[in-house]
Image 1 (cartoon, rainbow, N blue to C red):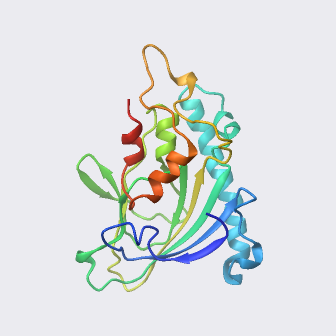
Image 2 (cartoon, helix red, strand yellow):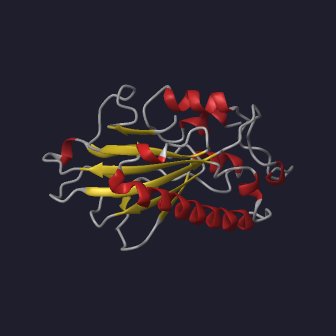
Length: 235
């Protein structure tokens, strides 16, 4: 939950099977969790710091638009510190000789608020649309934005977290993705839930309120999955 680490599967000892990737993880905010600059590998030190600044700006611009889209003040999500906790992850998907036997990353929804993704030109990302898995073709210079579980809850279901996965890499060239995960920064022992502005007699709350402890216990008590926290909070 702080600093920098190298890892294989985030849920290696909590899931039934491993998937075909490795990653480097760097906490960039808040201050008490941020990695020391000297601990970040020199080969990407400057770039990772710059990426955090740029990805945060993109995410906050998108969150302003999301606020406006549901009738909130454009600064509402920023004021709630929904970008106050940030983690940069570089994911490496090596060539897999038997891609039909595993996945690069298992099906899941992101647990936080919003995710910014930059991928190289090796395909693999898929999103669930109805009952089908749809390929997300890499576009040079494009960013992919994922709505995550907490955004679905806080928006009272106006926005839905996206179920996605990564196929095991059958190309000789590695697939690489650079990801910024954004989450609530100021919990302050309070509860979160659907915003009061989005609740009415016509649109009652779809989820109960929750605490920081509930959120992290749900994440670390199991493997990656889709919307399990949302399902627990449904009214």
